[in-house]
Length: 123
Image (tube, rainbow, N blue to C red; front, top):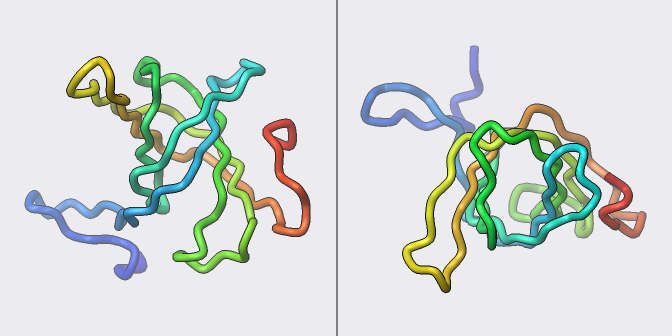
């Protein structure tokens, strides 16, 4: 049986992970690329993340992501989430001087202890 504490029921009675409105820096790159891009999370759930970007990528693009595990969901200060995922949705910015949004679903992830200095090269 699923842990209902991490899900909510929507109007169509399907269940989806609860989203935490957490803003933190996120680094991301398409799989196979060397250069990391920066963004900021808008919300995080156990299944994925919504974050802003300066340049949208195509839906289904495989990504590598790295962001600090927020203390709001029980982490040690400084712990990093290193994960892979894919883009499931993009949202165009309302105007050309604003950021677009990418929703990515996690396919796997790992945690890096807070005791190490975290850099994109660790991913």
